[in-house]
Length: 177
Image (cartoon, rainbow, N blue to C red; front, side, top):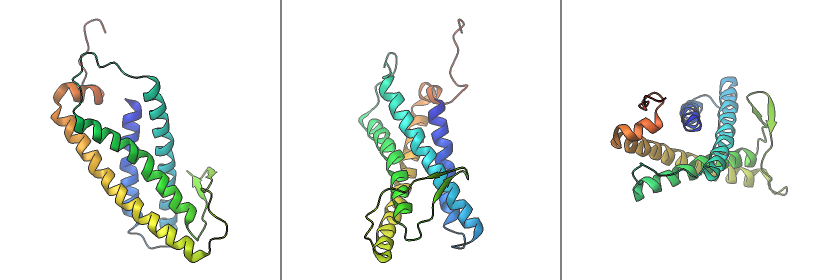
């Protein structure tokens, strides 16, 4: 459950920073700091999601006493995981393709490498690739927000048993606990 809520917090911070950084003056010191924070949060989400997938694969949960999810719920869940991986990777590709070649420093502490790019690309080609990745990153981010909303609506519609599995403090404790 901690992975779920940590992911949720990172997604909220990424949405807020993503919206805010597009409204700041390009090249400003505040904009630069916010872009670095956004990239750091994206890498953190990618690493956390990787850990979630590994953990989920290792701990296949038993469905005892749980209602089987609908096909739509399963599809949204799979799409959420795809987006949790794809959006940060496309953002990483965007940064890597940028003709500005600005390094990503995670939380001001350690430099994160760029993805390998062909060395013979001229700046105009890099800019076209970066622009295409920027559009893809934005479109997928908006689609991701839609998936998060669908996920939240499904949890609320699932009622107390569903919410009790997701929200700390809602689970009824048995007398033996």
